[in-house]
Image (cartoon, rainbow, N blue to C red; front, side, top):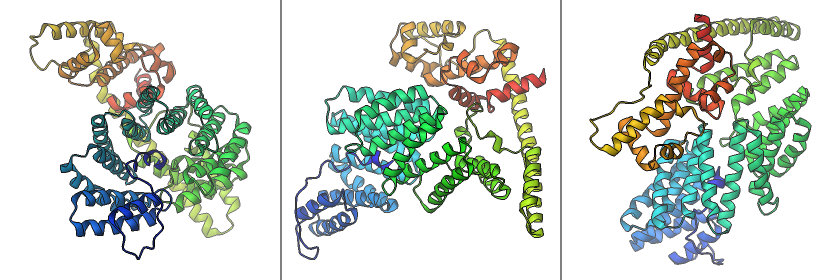
Length: 558
């Protein structure tokens, strides 16, 4: 993550060679030069120089110097992962810089503050800060300055599984970069964006699009000059092979990444270990897979910064130990998996049964019985056996209680949804918002009349129904159409279209048994969604249940 957010953080500093002892008296400017020389390769030393420079600035009573060194200190502390202290200093710098109205400096302060907040897990605050940085970037008037906050915002969307929106943002950034003259910064961002687009498509299991963008990135990078991007792109290529079931072809690529990343890039290293384990598991080399998974788990537990899908790791450990007939460890990792499952935010959960290969980790009664028999053979101690047996019994009861309670909750939400569906059936034209006032503007009224016809014809079910497409169909511009929808429908364009589609899906699924037999992917396509995951997430957000749960209850109700 930090490879993304370091760029442009120090652009206004000059570099010079100066080798003086820390004990001698030096000027403010000389200390700034020493800071500049060390900031990239020795943050601790740079912090010492910045602190000394601040002491001089305090004595001088120079507000501009104080503002400058507070930024330097925050920057060093951020690099050294002292993020709380860094936040204090960058906020001081912003407070002091605001009256000075130095737009470029404020942009850099806001960018750094966003980076710090992101590392502290304050994603919402970071998002607002990056938006502010983007505002300053626009005032600067140089398009390259807008790229950093845009990349950071896209990363936040990606982190919170808003994959479709993240991809749209990254593609927009790519278009912006293609309009700029080629510079080292433009080249850097282009590689970064290609890497993230490919990675985001992989999270959507879209190997075709992932391959397209990943190959472009690999063609534009070298393993020496661009190692920071080249090896993550190689890791993407290995994951593409894995998702295609080409496990033996994936392994050599993963090993190349592992050899590079060890001791250099912890997150990339543990990702390579994890995929060595996943490939081994798919090749039924279960003991080998456990070795890789356990090594990944050990590094993850020992690190504060490891970025790893811990839930998925426990899934694979549970299944791998089950395959090697180690019931005790299989149960341990299953319990860790279920605990993490419950912690996940509802908005981040996805219904993706076709690709979720670990669904078997949720035990059925027969599976628990099998584990119990294995544990009986493996456990020689009577005490150990009794404890394990009690654990199995508790797990069985808990599983039954949990899934029955879950079924009741879903049924209750389904029953509460039916009156809404009945109301929708009564309306010949679905209305997703109400006019806030009597419309006197003829131009607005004309747009609203066209929207009514648009809704009646169900034109929103087209997958090409973007704001631009719709504005063209309604013979207006995107800004005006968006304003009309916000004012008279009471919601954004995206929310307006999504609600129309979900309402239509609710009614048609209820009344069309053939449609109920379709796959979720086919149903998503039927109602204008390009991706199954987007449809499932939107359906859940609007109704409280997933489309598969809605269909299941419709069938049971008859």
